[in-house]
Each structure stands twice: as C-alpha cells, then as structure tokens.
Length: 199
Picture 1: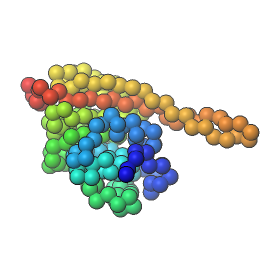
Picture 2: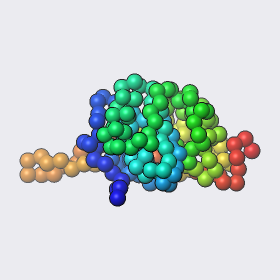
Picture 3: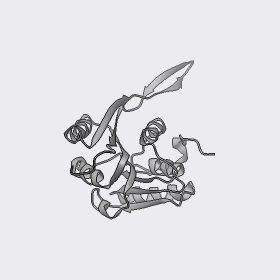
C-alpha cells in the first residue's frame, strides 16, 4: 500500500527546486487524483510531485513539463528510482507542447516562468469538467496573478486559496527550536461541470 509523503531525502536532487514533503501532501490531496487520472505537473523541478502523483494514479499517467534540462534528468532518474513507469518528462517551457497532451483530470503548477496567464488559458481548454488546478505560489505576485485569473474566469472556475507555513524543529543543545520553511500559498481551482471553455 502506498502512503503520501515520501521523505525529501529519498529523492535524487541537485540545485533544482523541489516541493517539500508537507506541501506535496497538501497539493496532492487538493488535486483529487484518482487511480486512472491524467495529470500535468508544470514546472516539475525534480519531479517530486510527479512521482507521488504517479503512485496515486497507477492506471493513469503524469506528464512532467520542465524547461531545465537538469530537471528533466532528475525527473527521469527519480521515476526510475521509485519504479513509476507512468511518468513522461517533457523538456519544454509551458504552455508550449500542452496542446498535444491528452485532456487532464488534474494540473499541478509549481513553476510558470512569468507565463501563468497563457499557461492557464491552455489548461482551461485541456482540463476536464470537474478537474482541478493546484497552483503553488512562493511569491505574492504569482498568487495575485492566479487569483486574478480565476476571478476573471469565475463562470468556469471556483477557487480557494490558503497560506501554509511549515516550521521544522531542530535540536540546539538541550533545546528544540523552530526553523521556518518558506511560506507557500496554495490556490485550488475546480472547473465548473456545467460549463465548457468559451461559454
């Protein structure tokens, strides 16, 4: 049986950004990934989200889009390391190449390279009704851009946003002190079942 939350240390890493364990867990829970889901992981980095999504969807498939060649190498290495053959790493800068993918049940966006609006335009057309987008935002600018998009497209999407702050305790002599991780905003949007794109 598979449980969410692979330890961060188990992933093959370099300087490529990685979504940390607690944020991965929340992201995947919000995404509502089913065993046969098709998932896009945009700005996949090391592939930590892709790997866990693929394990949640053994009869489905995960398309990990990443523009950094080192990230592509890491995604493939991690997919092999965790024995998940249902991950395809695609070296591209989204939204390039997304039109060629099968329609998605869930879309995870961890990096958008200042192209969030055009990415969401394509996601809007490729996401199945009832499907979910989960946007992980480190910066306030990305958060505001995401919220603005979903507000502008409020007939198509309903959304919620939460801020998550994780603190890890570390031993300092006889004491345990908190070490803060970067706060993350999670924006989750669900595509309205009653409407299709353009209506």
